Image (cartoon, rainbow, N blue to C red; front, side, top):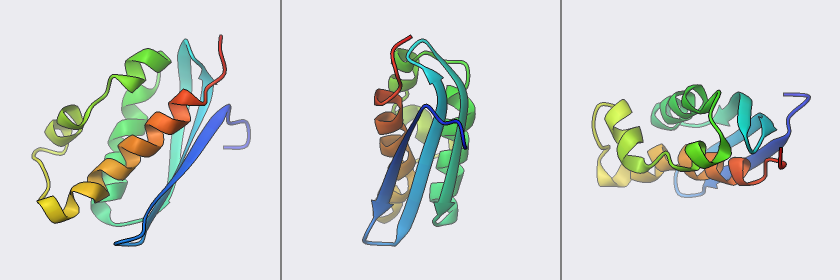
Length: 103
């Protein structure tokens, strides 16, 4: 996203997942959220759900998204060995949201 207001990169060295989340907006309104990834299907699905969900939210609302919402949206908690794959986008999104400028 060429006009991103904030971004964050995340990686899981154990499986090789790499993700970048970019946001446009400010702390009161996330106007756009996008991601790029070189990752497994579970990580990509999580990133897709999360970037769709945060559009239109405030930073505080976006930071309130938790793992239980994500697992429910994925229709179940992944096996323990794949849990980090699902949570990497959530962690990366939180860091991008925290970097958004004030209104």
